[in-house]
Image (tube, rainbow, N blue to C red):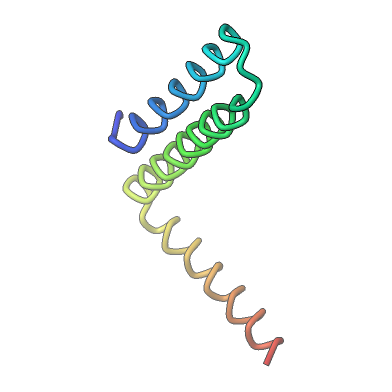
Length: 85
């Protein structure tokens, strides 16, 4: 399932790799970090998109499991918040 956030992540990763390649070819030592950071941002965004796709699929296929998981997270959040007060 290809959605726009994954496309954007692939595009950003490709742009970062292209910038790294051009910096190495030209010999510019001033900006290779920006290309690497943009590439890393694309990888992180793609990873988050895959996690969200998986989560959406699990909740669509197993709604009771999703409800149980949300209940457990809510319970744990209330326990931690009550301890702080």
